[in-house]
Image 1 (cartoon, rainbow, N blue to C red):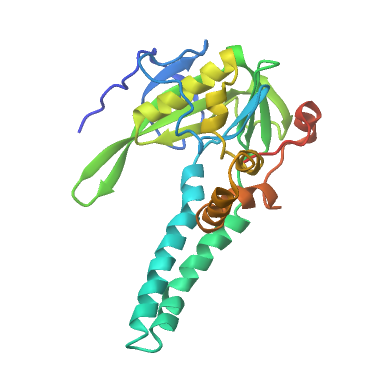
Image 2 (image 1 turned 180 degrees about the vertical axis):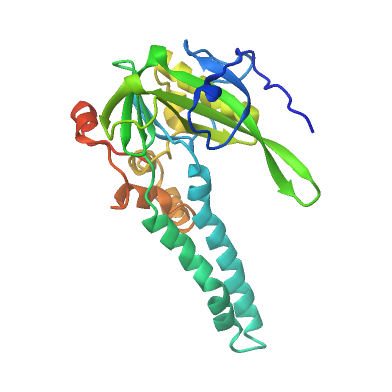
Length: 291
């Protein structure tokens, strides 16, 4: 096993070495900005990016930072699993009368646990990019930063992840945003002069680059009709607007599908257990809290 360079043409950076406290070390850090520039040879499309963004409009975009695709997928996974379990239990109950009840007792707590996790674990605030005024707003542990776009520091890096007893290692890729004390805006005063925030991660390097390329393209050029089609399900408001364009039959099927497999899109809109932008930022954008 050896550290291989990232497949992008950006310069090396020592930003990670400047951190006072290293929560975890990554490798091969490459500086993507400033100035913000795209990775050559990678798409800047918003296709398959619906889990990466919480809201998109002409003025600003909210970027989901981490685990959102996993969290939105957990209810679907557990519901599919429980449907299979209940069908098997129903079949077996023809031979053993209490089989269905026994399966519910055995697997029901896991089912409940996933929903309790979704309901009561607060969602973190996204990163908000304001293309009208040229600022990036970041919330990090009660501290809020306002970083000029032209001073935004984003890096790509990777870490080795252990995936199995067969000594299988795989590289997980990260995009980090760095926050400097001089960009403090409101909330708790920063405890360190330089901190970083993970804004995306995954095992597909190209997907990390595509997300970044889309962000740069959005900031420079704004939205296209294709973007709104690709990101129609980023939040509950967008989902409702997209639903209006469809026939009654498709609406019924999609609503049932959402309730069974993607209930998070509804819950994230109404849950009281979520963070909110402070009044200083609401004074700029209004009460626009997306997750």
